[in-house]
Length: 116
Image 1: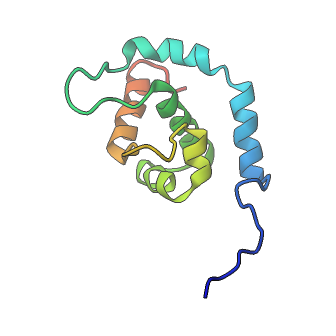
Image 2: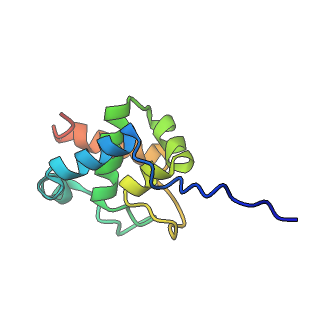
């Protein structure tokens, strides 16, 4: 016996958090910020390939806006589909940024005076 769905499409409800992230996506000049950060961002010649600057920047913005620590935003990326969607992390990804990757990006911004 299979259970029938309730007919709910949970991905379309316009929550306050979704509205906030959609507004942030519209008002922030992402391309200008990325252009400032990109020259300082690692190019990935050794080790694991880096995540796109846009993804890391959007994670950083969520972290700051929602007051999440590095471990908390790491967990939230696994738990909250809205956060993955905002950061451009699709279902086909084989890995997500972990807390040390997030920490290194934040330190990169701080080192170059870009965190503010």
